[in-house]
Image 1 (cartoon, rainbow, N blue to C red):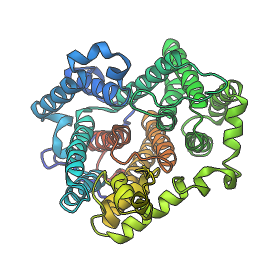
Image 2: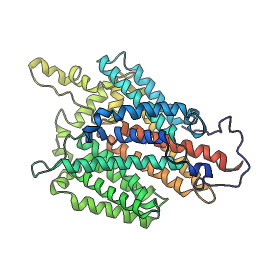
Image 3: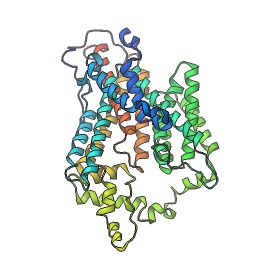
Length: 450
């Protein structure tokens, strides 16, 4: 969807300043550091992406997730000025996102299990609200950078704790059910966080920050191999391919060196069982996913059937597993006393299509397309400035790589309503917002705009 960006009415026409750069923000923006709202939003990412309360149960009595959410929303409503005005969140990505939220609400009355659908929808409301609060809390490109590094740090901390607490053995060579995530979810989370670590390693000026980011990348690489996830491995390869081909803001030599180090860690820490598992990607006929009724292929086929059977509103938000146990062809086995697995969709697109119908699937895909398009516009605009805003362009490409990695991993998982996804969407909305508003102040009339 093409999008024309216009200045908010109260900003008026951009001043006749010399052509500037988003890499050289005004002194007011440069001096803006961490404040209470940004700290609360960072805590929200740590709670809902890094799952800190599950890692450290001693924090449960303090209810950090609830406190950070309530404070973030309250403080954002109190800070409706400058770069934090809610109207600045207006973008095509936001429109598709709100459309998805509305359509998921419309799926509740006709859901197979209305109680489950309503509970899932109310949680999705929280996810979307916090997505907008996260995007709205940013005041500058530097704030977006801070929050993506919180995402990276939270993911690294989660993986480090998991690696320390869950020991593997020859009979149990891969991680299984962990804190909140399973091994496959964890691998996709790792793939989405790796571009942020690479951004820090190659973009930070402070040696200590670069060293910590490099250590974090090494931990994530080990976590990827311990997960044993084929979908996560494909997501990782997608990120590697994008960095090599599409990450034009970093010199090719630096990209290659960084990726060689990460790949070396993956190859040296992976077990023989891991590579045997990865080889089944090329030979799927021997895998249960292609032969079993509970495998991914048959499950996807049934999911498409649910979508075609209820093409408008689907079976209801978060009702895919209910459909598996009640209206699927397998459900008839219960009449003969046979067990029926209420299988998860194992594909985010199938999940959305089956649960929200064809319009819901189009809204979901539209949100992704709009996020990718907005990041591309930001990167293209940054390169037109004189001098080019390299930090802004690099950040746009980093977020693109993270979203791309998530999208590939989510093709094999059920992640349609997760904080992981909508944190990445929030980063894209935030970067577009601050780039648009800064360009109105720094670029003279007639200069290229986003």
